[in-house]
Image (cartoon, rainbow, N blue to C red; front, side, top):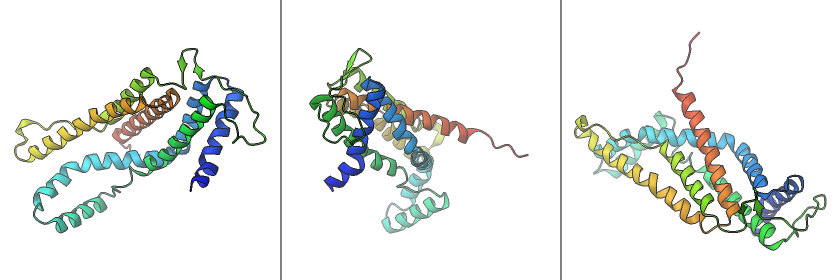
Length: 241
């Protein structure tokens, strides 16, 4: 499994990283370019993931209603929930696939940055990729991407907050009565996640090399922009000719 990971992800990304560095001798720019290429490759899957996540968010009121109707019958609740998903053509696991795909890419990039920025190890280079001998970890003349970087970690957290904010649900009006109680509870839970995830992003980002924090920030930013465009398209009225 480890050998397969190296052949399919670690080595290709490493060679792409070094090859780009040979052309663009700024490690930060190289990481940005790699991030864009990865996001382009995952674009169709990310689109499906965003749509699935948005659909799940929109279904929350009906899901909560089902929980109240069948709170004493878990089997009936499961059947009605699956029926609701089928009626609205929602795949509850659809939002997970891009995350699962990005995790091994993230791990591969971690090993790439470790080898290239801290060890100057180029054993995995393909014969046709020139060995630069040394990669300067300082980017834009400011950031040492081989070391932890507070600014980039915080930026990653802010990007995570913006992305999550788009899915946050508003509190229902007080006049919503009993039906609004569950909405209030769900909105409160969403609000907690809205703040918990960005804080976790910052905490984890502070433990990683600045290069990974840069990747995390820019990748999340691009995903958030993709969400913004997709949501605007969904709100546009369909013109019938």
